[in-house]
Length: 153
Image (cartoon, rainbow, N blue to C red; front, side, top):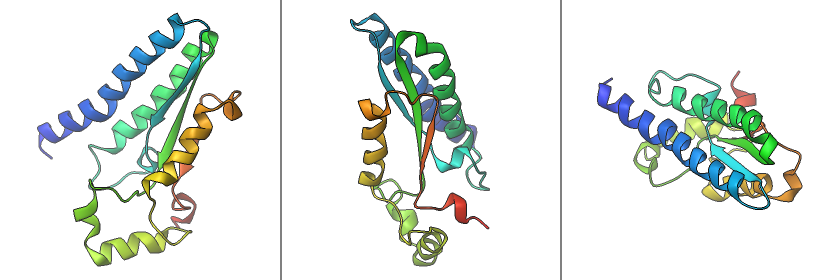
């Protein structure tokens, strides 16, 4: 793997998450009243490895860990920090990869709900974590993968 691939993936996924979390946390700490909800978008890849994802999976695990540490560090300011771990979500980014019919069908077959995710499948968990319905939830992770993780056997 080219070093540039590692650097770019780390910069976008992990460094970007760190810096935006830091900026938002400072705003939430300094506002009156203090508090808020920070939601990191991690991935099912934070929990499992992949031969072609050695640059990606550590960054998504880092986002999960970042949210857990932020939950501990920021709770005293009434700031909650949680992570959403999507499975395969059909987006423009992976459209070409998913155009391989055999690969796509294989991914769908491994998913308990029998389909890949759509962006709005992630919106619900994010809205929940951002809302007062989750006012006692921090340091948590929501796996939104259509049942892929539980069906890996």
